[in-house]
Amino acid sequence: MIRKEMIAMLLAGGQGSRLGVLTARVAKPAVAFGGKYRIIDFPLSNCINSGIDTVGVLTQYQPLRLNSHIGIGIPWDLDRNNGGVTILPPYEKSDNSEWYTGTANAIFQNMTYMESYHPEYVLILSGDHIYKMDYEVMLDFHKENHADVTIATMPVPIEEASRFGIVIADENKKIQEFEEKPANPRSNLASMGIYIFSWEALKEALYAMKDQSGCDFGKHIIPYCHEKGERLFAYEYNGYWKDVGTLGSYWEANMELIDLIPEFNLYEEYWKIYTKSDIIEPQYLSPDSVVDKSIIGEGTEVYGEVYNSVVGAGVTIGKGTVIRDSIIMKDTQIGENVTINKAIVAENCYIGSGAVLGVGEEAPNKLNASIYSFGLVTIGEDSVVPEGVTIGKNTAISGVTTAEDYPNGILESGEVIIKAGDLV
Image: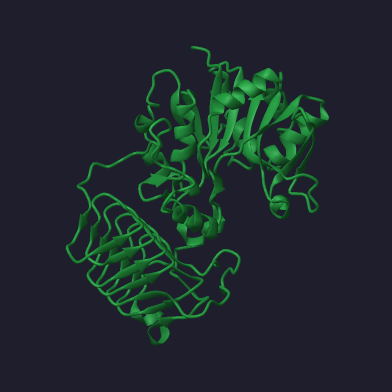
């Protein structure tokens, strides 16, 4: 086996429960983004653009879509005999079968995979962030400082700092203290959940902490390395980075792509975002259609009007339909004279003619007010909305619904319809 200087371990097992019905049947990293991508495309593209050709992708929750999307890694040039991309699900051992119980436990269970490459350094990544980053620059910083662990950090507003792991570093960026989600943060340098470990330091820490239940990098491994007196450094990143873990941040990140000068450019020649693309026919916009400030996916047919929205591939938008400020994912069929305002409609849905989505006053969601907020209508994949119904804000629908599910033809703001079997 050829030695690899640095390999990447990409944690993609998360359920993403804060995305509600969007992740009822699919892992968060496999959720569609920006019309043609999936969230995991971003860290994978960063790897190949940074010259890292060996990536282990750790899957767990609803991995099917993720596995078929990544396949053998062809779109990212990761189909290699030596290295390339490897899907690493939890597997049965002879004495027991163990789910991954925490981020570090997941890495520990794949010790054999990592050892087979004799790496000098291991890069740990999350599969659910939208950003572009050259990991090679971070590795140079790690080497210059003779670090055992380097944590990618970015400045955040101090009032948001308690949501993150926070590092306190000296003028040389050497970490003095690390606090996981502190109530009263003393610094605004937040950990991005991106780490470079020197292999020996990682191995030693994983073995030492292996019996911790739910062993996690932020809670266990980083504090362990710090207490042992190892050299921890904070690499400061100042580019665009978005954690799309809530419906609001996911919606916002998509909407930012269609700004006249987007803060995050998907189309830079020198830093391409690669994805698995099906070969389909181009878009069709009918002579009466209107499309303004939107992304329209390939194979989509527009007979109505689309404003300020992100529409995936293979979507049909009927005549007289008006869509504003929304995300419509691939293969969704929308009938005629439909009105959609500020909605997220997942893949392969059907919206009946004359339906109206996103009207009236906001009300807190009765199932989970913290997830279904931001004034959004959220519709899970493979759902059906019947003709002529009216749906309020902060609502969620999952499954094949019929007119009987809508009292007086209305789903009031804050209400949900989740069909049996669609647990969220």
